[in-house]
Length: 450
Ligand code: UDX
Image (cartoon, rainbow, N blue to C red):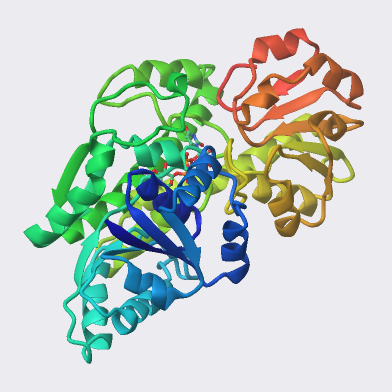
């Protein structure tokens, strides 16, 4: 099928590239000219595993093109996927202005009827507004637009894998023709008819994904309900970690045992500095707000947010206890991205921590394998080092703020030698406390006996 993707951010690029890999003819558009120019030169504006290979292969095979001409792009597709940003406004509501202007664009530029698919994360009932906007702005052409919701469940760092090997594909529709069209679009993914760029060993065979058909409101709600539940699991694990600290238990032993119960599951029970990134914090906030608009106080999620906000405070207090005085101390920070395998620093707990340490009067040096460039813009007051060993040089404390696996594989003996004081504060429970102690470190983490 011919598909248009509007918005070439994380979601749009992965969606466009993977739908092309599934055999469709995809044109992607974005108003950021520099971004489109880079893509047309064979560059990739984001750090995302396997995305480069999929994009270049499908560009070569002429199934994937990029343009700044949004009108031309809209006219090219039978289905138009909206993948624009819905960032939080100051009051926590999602900013839907980009969706609104895309609706106007589609309505005025289309010359044939289109299926308009919301991929961006939007509050429930946006579909209704979108349908109305398309009808109002498209009234002169009299074209009939159909609307569907198709939430994405892509994790940064594994987004290509998540798109091509999903657990479930959710489509919210209100007529059979739309369901049929979306089934056709996703059929190659359901049947595994694409070249998987992920190596076999990392990509365990699994059955076909569930193709779930719901109404549009449910589909929109599923995204916020899922992400808020993931956030809830993390905050729960963090609260349990705090209790473990008080009572001499080990949170990793506790959550491992909990996770073996299939009703709970082992994932998203990792205690530490808390959740960040562009999705979980904003989706929890937006879910609280949309409940409020509907007349419900979602107090449970407010607590989830509060626990998460307090992680940085708790960590700084741990540092104060260990260092006595933070002001004037040299602190090294390993990790700036909001999690491993991404260069994304948006709402990163590491960046918040960096700001807090600066406010406390510490001298901060940092390193991240992928996120240095983005971090420099958000956190200008610190120094940046070329590798972890340079960060550790002469510091009074070394912090692990992102769970990059390569930090666990460092030569810790060498690090020990170059630190002014061998104090490691592990904000991601990445290292083994007894091994660290054996190597002569003073080591603190979350919820594990010291
Ligand atoms: C999330 C959802 O997982 C994904 O389905 C959705 O489409 C987009 O939002 P992402 O933002 O890429 O994906 O990050 P995710 O892997 O969910 O991690 C979010 C944050 O939680 C990170 O800061 C991570 O470090 C933290 N986290 C995760 C924990 O603190 N503990 C855990 O056990 C897991």
